[in-house]
Picture (cartoon, rainbow, N blue to C red):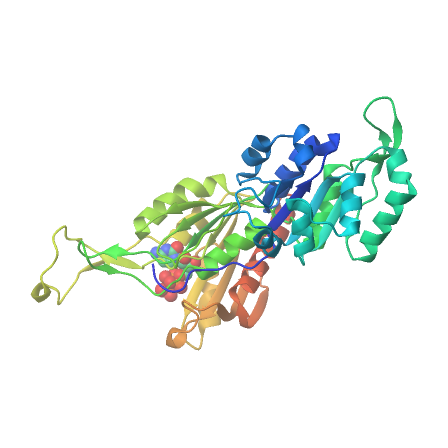
Length: 406
Ligand code: CTP
């Protein structure tokens, strides 16, 4: 590992506030669906909501610590840190009492304090008895919150707890999720899709201390994995040598050599709908790796053997309905022609070719190149962030999968 740690763009962190309505149990499903869409969720329940759904449930579902008061776990759950981290605060269900406290700008528990301390968009999903919703006190509070820029959904109309019915029902999860996607600018294009991404360089051992490697940081592959998660895909990353990263929500398989990467791809690719081969696989390895450290006077020559081409192998394994994306690192003037030929030879659906002359692109956050498509399309990128290329790749995978799956 080398270089600065890889940081990912914002946009995945949701604070899910839960107040004391019977609909709190429905929020368990909202949390799950948020995770399906690639969001990372911290639940902040009000103390009295724990009468409906307990802390253990929220902790188990979110995989994160849960607190209701600013005084709990104060070392790791600071309201300011939570407020800063949030890309969206979703309050579901919001009771009349919580709406009233928010309207007054109170800060008497962790949830209201976090809302007050945050600049993130706030989406409020009310659920209460029709009389409480229609009460002019609530109506004025809702109006005030809307004037302050918060989004307050209209509750559904229908049967409520007990014999009553009317306006005040907790909306269907799908309506809440679609509102969240709109506010966070997410597209859910790869929902229920499994995507396999290789990232980083391989290391081919010469002896116990030396290896043949390359300058890949893994940034491009990890950007693709991140954008796939943001589009709702289930993501597996096969990571070779990369800069340090943490990518919550992705399954990561660590490998070292090209042979290990090949084994992992052969095993995992059939379980996925798309493979993005962003790894910089070493083209060759020492024919005979030595178990003993080689003395320097025996180092003048190292005999090499070519590694298998993993992308080409995946191209051969590819079944109908699967998409393969390759990369090419070229330095010459005719790099576009070479890349088109590479795309066809390796049976890829898309190939991103970047110009790596003079060490450009490797280890950097920027890239310039072309995204080529097997149907002849080509899109140019000039000094863009690797996430822009990643987004374009994810978009194309989504569109192509839609087409092949009807
Ligand atoms: N690749 C691979 N297995 C290898 C070598 C490369 O899967 N043994 C993949 C890379 O992950 C990338 C693509 O092939 O997606 C292009 O790699 P590149 O090194 O640019 O091209 P090569 O096919 O190795 O051709 P050449 O070195 O002759 O340009």
